Structure formats: structure tokens, C-alpha cells
Image (tube, rainbow, N blue to C red; front, side):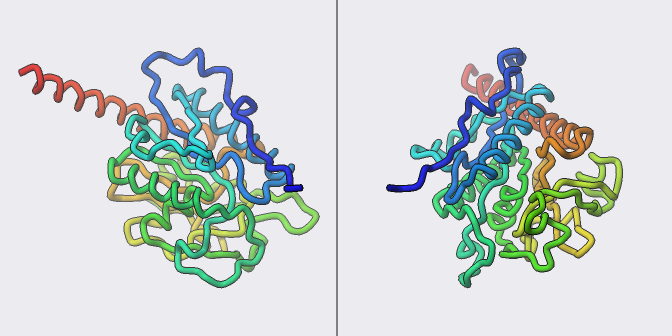
Length: 280
């Protein structure tokens, strides 16, 4: 008999405030694998809690959050992301090492889903081409770097700053440095913040298109941005961890939503100009 496949149920994470949003609320696609190989009761609870917090924070900021399951049997066609004003990529399982040139065994690996990886990479490249606002968290940040040609650290060692040890909670508080002049430093109003971390992989060689904007005390890259795009930010930590700093989480998500609303306005202006040309 096959093992029971655990899966996040959308009804358990969708916030009630969706119905109260204004009709013109910006639409945010929230890309996340609602299941992955080896999901346990513990990781299911974390995925539910983190996804719910992310959706609630988006809705509180005035955005209409819509789930896009990157592990669905029938995947949403990549072209349909064109209709969204912003895209959020959440965390999950490990990225397949072969996608960034690593073919040796990876210690502590879990949750690898090559199909979901390839789908997300396709989505990210489309978002970048269209210059839609993007916030990429943990796995999402790693996929952003891979999509742009960078690599990952397959298994951090030493790891003590980035996750809990055996017998301890997976997530811990970590102090990181934000680079002066970066989007994150401006949003947080500080060059030193405490974040929630629980990861064994991280950005390795930063893609040439991206810039490192957050660094751990051991030198591991904790955040990137794409200087050639309007608003593309990747963070290795979990701002959507409800045990973390709510003020910092709100600030980051609010800025993402603000740029998504600007994207909505820009798209609306383009549509009006197109309509004017057609009518003429």
C-alpha cells in the first residue's frame, strides 16, 4: 500500500477577508506547491501556517491573493500569469541540484519535485520578461537565482545560524545585514534586522542579473534583487512565519502590494491606449 500523500487544503489557508476587498484590488498570484515528496505532518503544519499568514498579509494590504499550485495535476498555463499584477513565490521543498549543475548526492535533501521546479522556473522567467512585481521567499528566492543562471549551496555547513539542530525547532531567529541602498534596507529602515530562518540550502553564486542585498553573519547570501526590473526581491528567510516580526512582515508585503497596484495602473493605462488606437 502506498504512503498517504499529505497536501495543503486551500480551504485551510484562504483568508476570510477576500470577500471584503474592493473590486479594483490588485491580483497577486501566490505560487506554492501544496504537496511535495516526503511531506510530513510537521511540514504540512508549517506550510499551512506560512501560506495562511502570507495570504492574510496580502489581503490586509488590499490585494486579492490567488493560489497557484505548482504541484497540481493540471498546472495553470504559464501564460495565464500575464493577467496578474504581481507574483509571490513561497517556500517548500529542495530544488533539484541538476538544474544548477550539481549532480552529487545532497545531504539532508527533502521534497525534491523536478516537475514543480521546472514549472516555477518557467513562471519566473515569464514574470521577469514582463517586468511584473515579484517577491520570492526561501525556495522562491533560490529558484529566482537559478532562473537567472546562478547556483545554490546544496547543503549548508556550518548550518547553525540558519536552522535548528536535532531535537530543536526547525526555525530560529537570525540576525542579518541589509546592504545600504538596497530595496530591503529602505523598506525595513535599518541595515540590521532579525529574521526567521529554517533552511539547509541557500543562494550560492549570485546570478549576474541579480545583486546580493542581504547577508548572514557567516557570509551566506540571504536576499537578492534584480536591478534591471521595477521590483523583484528575493529573501531566503521566512517573513511569512507568524512567529516572526509582524511589523517587518507587514512593511515588506505592503511595498510589494504597492508596486503591484502601480503595475495594475500601468496595465490599465496600456489597455486604454490600445483601445484608443483601435477606436481611432
